[in-house]
Length: 276
Image (cartoon, rainbow, N blue to C red; front, side, top):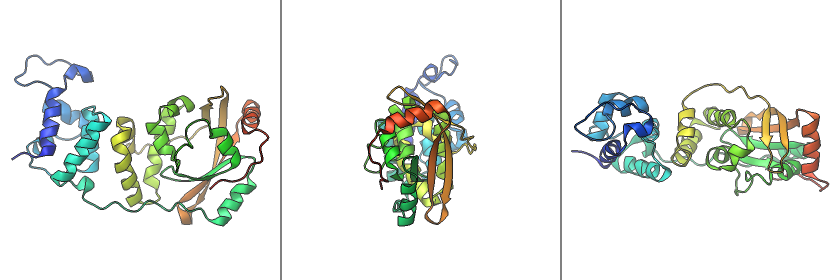
């Protein structure tokens, strides 16, 4: 007996033409769409395991397998959400555990005081999930027009993978995306990371999920920004770990005179203060 999850995967496999995914045409076939071998190879799983999922003999695919199948089938965000829902009602492990609470987002007063001392420099307090928990007024003034700070709780990881403006802002978008995905493995905790990954993967798509399990340590070179004002910014990043709170204090320093002058213009003459 099949399952809704297996039926959906099989139906999507039958509906995808190999040439649409850059696969060679293998001649006439008895059924349309991708062969199980092609889909299994793209998803990084065995043909036997894929067969068990499609036939309803495996009802507990992991988060990684569900995301890999979504990537391999090139599902759009709505289809990804539906796939995860079907995994849930099928009884999959990917949603069987209760979601942990979000990580600590309070910044200690002494850290806020330290942040204030960094004015009029560019600095922020963040966690490994990408939440921007506090920032200097200068950072707000410079980044305010990029869309990064629009959310009630700004999150750099979500912005990088889901906001089209991020690809315009970050000159080295691929490198920044690698950094944000890698940092999820470093905390605040395994449970928080799994919760955030499960929440983000359906909307962020393959650009996110294929990076999460790569385990490639990013180089973290100079951060290059194409600011909406037209300025080209090059910034060094200095990071201080606040290990007891699983947070970081990040300071952005101009890497050249042109960037220093541009930052001075962008932050303007306003009186600046740290923002939490």
